[in-house]
Structure formats: C-alpha cells, structure tokens
Amino acid sequence: MATSEDVSSRWSEILAPNYAPATLIISLGVALLALNSFVATVSLPTAVDELGGVALISWAVTLYLVLAIVGGSGAALLKQKLGARRALLGSASLFLVGTLVVGSAGAMPQVLVGRALQGLGEGMVAAICFALIPALFPARLVPKVFGLQAMMWAIAAFGGPAAAGLLTEWLSWRAAFLFSVPLVLIFGAMVLVAVPAQLADEQVVQFPGARLLLIGAGILLVALAAVLPPLAAAGLLLLASLVLVGAVWLDARSRDRLMPPDAFRAGTVVGTGLWMSLLMNIAAAGSAVYLVLVVQQAWNYGPTTAGAVAAVLAVAWSASAITVANVRQRSTRKLLIRTGPAMIAGGLLLVLAGLQMDQVVIVLAGQLLIGAGFGTCNGYLNLSMMEAASDAERDRTSALVPTTQSAGGAIGAALAGVAANAAGLASATAPSAVMAAMIPVYALGFVVAVLALLAAWRMVGLMQQSEHGHAAMLADGLPGEAG
Image (cartoon, rainbow, N blue to C red; front, side, top):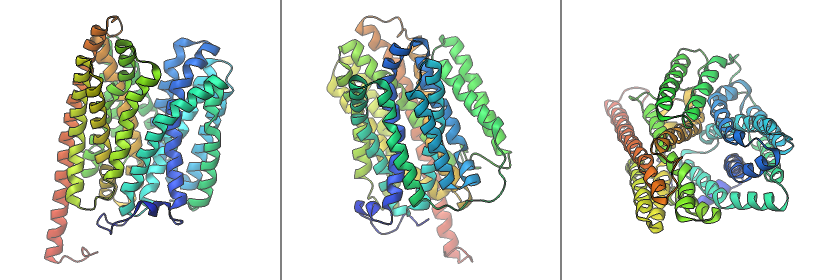
C-alpha cells in the first residue's frame, strides 16, 4: 500500500474509471447497512402490529446486531478461505435471503430468522468491504473513501426514515424491507465486475465455531443486561466480559486467527486504535439510543422533528470527514486523531446541558460536536491502523474495524440501559424525571469518551516512536530499510 505522504488527490479521482467500480462497491456495502438500520427502526413497529408478538420486537434488533458482530468477526477468515469475490457474493446472498424471509414473513418468528440472516450477511459484507479498501485504493485516497462512507450514512439518516415511512404507509412494511433487494443485486453485479476472482490463500482454514460462539454469546449477554435490574445487569456484564476475553484468548492461540495478533494490545498502534474505536462507539451509544425518545417524551416533539435532531450528528460526521479528507501532513493527522474523542466528550456534555436547560439549540450544538468528532478522526484512525498492520495481517485488521464499532454500539447501549434503568427512566412520567434519568447516561458516555482520548494519545505516541525508530535505522544505514 502506498504511503500516506503521497501527492494530493482530488475527490473526482475516486470516481475515475479505474476506481469507480470499487467506490460503488464500498458505497453500496455501507448503504445496505445504513438503510437497513433505519428501515428496521421505522417499519418494525408496523410489522408487530400486523403479526403480533410485540414482546419480540427488541429481539429483531438484538439478533441482527449479535449476528452482524459474529459475521464481521469471521469475515477475514472467510475472505482468506474463499477469496474476496466469492466471500462478498456469498455474504450478499445471505443478506438477500434474510431480506426475502422478512418480507414474506407470516409471523414474528420468521421475522426473527430473517433479521438474523440479514445481520450475519451484512456483518460479513461490511467487514470484507473494509478489508478491500487498502487493497483497491492507494493510501492517499483512503481518507476520501471514509469521507464517502460518512456521506452515505448522512444520506441514509435523512432519506432512510423518510423512504421507509412512505413505503410503509403507502404500500406496506414488507415493501420497506424489500427495498434493499435491488441494491443487493446491483452490489452483486458490481462485485463480479470489479473484485478479482483469485483466491487470497489456498490453505485449508478451520471453521472457528467455538470462538464465534463465544463472541456471539458474549455480545448477547451484553444486550440482555440492558433489560435486567441494575444488580443482575452488573453480574451479566461481568460474565459477558469474561466470555469475550476468553474468545480473544482462544483466538490468539488458534492457527487460523479471526483477529490480528495486536488486537487490543495496549503496546501497539493497532491495539490502541481498536480500543479507541471501541470506546468512542461505547461513549456515543447512550445518546443514540435515548435522545429521540427523550425529546419526544419531555418536549412533545413528533417523530420527524425528533429524528431530525438525531440526524444532525450524521450530517456533521459527513461534513467534517469530507473537510479533513485532503489533509496530507502526518502531524495534522495525529492531531485530528487526538482531537476527535475530546470533541465527542465535549459534545456529550453539551447535549446533556441542553436537555437539562430545555435548550434545543445547545442540544444541536452538542450533536454537531459529537458528529464532527467522529468525522475528523475516524478516517485517519482507520488508515493509521491499516498502515501499522503487516501485509499478512491487514485483512484481519481492516475487517475487525466495523465489527469493533458494532460491538461498541452494543456494549454502549447495554451500559446506557443499565444506567437509565438505575436512574428510574422506566417509571418516569414527568419531563423533569425523564431528564434527570439522562444524567448518568451522559455522564457514563463522557467518562468513556475520556478513556478513548487517553487511548488516542497512547496510539499517537506509539506512532511517533515507530517513526523515530525507523528514521534512526535509516540514519544508521541499516540494510533493507531504505525501501
């Protein structure tokens, strides 16, 4: 992969004939994930009204998320076994089957099966698309690819709920889910055109069943903790952490690893980068879960207005990612990596202050700051991890990024649920009680964002040590270092 010091590039370059098919593949992979998330949020309540089984609606989201994390965890190994083209086509086919199952469901159990298949397929698609970025694009274009991803999320944040709502109202909730079918077919056609057919590795790969089972069980325990009383939830979270640590320990000792050897090791750039990514997503998850609900309950906002307040974050993410995509100086990139978590921490405090003061302008300012925090640092965080990984481990590192982000969202939502329940949100009726219950949710997010900031400082420090060591070896004229 080219170095990050390459000459400047224009946005139009990722749309040039030699990169356009790869750009479309990455964009469609992100669009499938983003649109499906918003469609489910809007259309599932109508599906429950028609099919019954209201108690199962949360499981339609939980199973999707758990299976997406499991699929993402095994994606690098699947790519190694089958090659990128067949792995993507197989994953997309799995998502397509799940979509058709949901769209034709006659009862909620079928919806749950379809959502699980959707999650498994989409988790693998997203992770493999991430792994393809350093393979299909030079390093100078990678920040623009991440900027384009942020743009796709922003478009989905505004267009997804509107399209899903219109399809649900004018046709049916089934039509809203089946809207993904033509996108999957276009995605598959582009994969056939743009992704090389050859296998990445001819060796026989053992199926990592025990490790995937542990990862899925750990995330499922985290999700369950959100609906239990605080004491039971704390115990379940402790058990979940032990299960997930066990999965990482077992993977490190396996011949065919799911994760790179530096995964979550505090003394490496990749390890601290993954911690930073995990912690940032944990920090922001509570606000993502509760903000729309709170402004509806306490301020009597309608779904559209409340959704617009939440969507400001995605727009800020996209705009900031595009703004910083042309940064070439390594020192500036490092500054952006360190600045991102600080902006997220400050944004969470602003949102909390705005809620407590009944000032929507302050809430919007906080949303803008949180989104800008992710947008300014996310692309260069991911690029730095890809550059730090060895050629042999780049696929595993890249594929682990979206899986880590999803895991952070799941863990953060569960922790926020425990905090909100402990503060009495479930029994709160008065707006003041609802707002008071948000204090521990946002306080927890702020503390985790500060931890992400510490991880960012550690990561940049390790990057600087590596660069100084490399420069010293070049100055000593060691053989083999000049390239």
